[in-house]
Amino acid sequence: MGSRIAALGHYQPARIVTNHDLAGMVETNDEWIRDRVGIVSRRISEGEGVADMATYAAEKALAASGLNAADIDLVIVATCSAEDRCPNMATRVARRLGVPTPAAYDLNTACSGFSYALANADHAISAGAARNAIVIGAEKLSDVIDWQDRTVSIIFADGAGAAVVTHSDEAAIGPVVWGSAPEKGEMIRIEGWQPSVKQEGQAVFRWATTAVAQHARLACEKAGVAPEELAAFVPHQANTRIVDAIAKRLGLSENAVVAKDLVESGNTSAASVPLALSKLVERHEVPSGAPVLLFGFGGGLTYAGQVVRCP
Amino acid sequence: MKDRSEIVTGLAEILEEVAGVNPDDVAEEKSFTEDLDVDSLSMVEVVVAAEEKFDVKIPDDEVQNLKTVGDAVSYIQKNAA
Image (tube, rainbow over all chains, first blue to last red):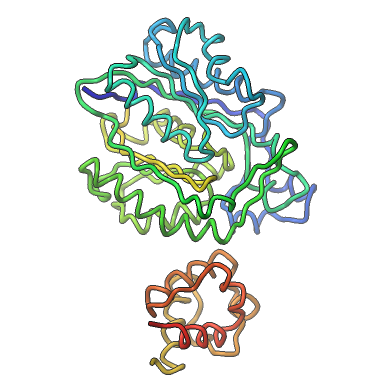
């Protein structure tokens, strides 16, 4: 007995902020941002909060799954930008979806959050502690950005992605590889009561392009899938140069789809993996049942990932 | 110990692979950022590749001190296993 992703959904705010828009606010330019980060435009909230965006994404996933709200008994929201400390985002989402009595909690491992939450749901279902789960990555990072700081304002954005996870005879969510590098934990920070994101870009880049590739390879091994057999690779959407470097080290086949949703969505931390995956599936870029490697990494420095079968 | 010109040649190969730098342009007095147009992220990739090629550890804090190709050559010569 295992679990599978039954359906996906995503939500992004309507407001598009381009590199040219940012060039009018801070000393930067389109060419520099495209070259260093790979982002062309990003979506920024027009007032929607984390729970709002999480709910909209979850509604779509739930509708596509064919299940009813009453069938759901576990709701997990991965986020590092929850608008309040209590109640958690998960119970707010559950209330708005009409899920009556779910186990409901938030999980904060920043950019790796979705894969952590997906593993939690898989484990809970496999252990019989839940039957049907909604797993969401949702972030409103525009709240924790110093818009005058050009090292972060060009990178981060808002959005949400959700998956309905259900029991399955075949284990379609592979074993998780998860962990952290606590000694490097301060390299990405959102500290204090009026927080703003800070990061040491070069050191994070180095960790992401070296250590993360090894962990991602291990996730393939644990699932019994060779990297060259993957139909798609959906890493945390941090930076196209990081994505390319990891993909190269993994040794994917030429036909494998490598998600680069950040080009039009920015870096949405815990939301980036489910957002990119949901869009790939919506556009039929990956066949149903094909192996897809999800891999989140970032703040903490935490990481988690697993091979899943595409819904 | 590798001689300096051997290390320069090795670095030139890495610079070509990582950042598309013409190997003929690589010389000890050249600055990575100013002369060879290697940006901060490519510099990280160069350092990682140099660690593997020359069996040397180059910590994050050290990277900022490597301004020129010659700086890197000296560091590698001094610290290579």
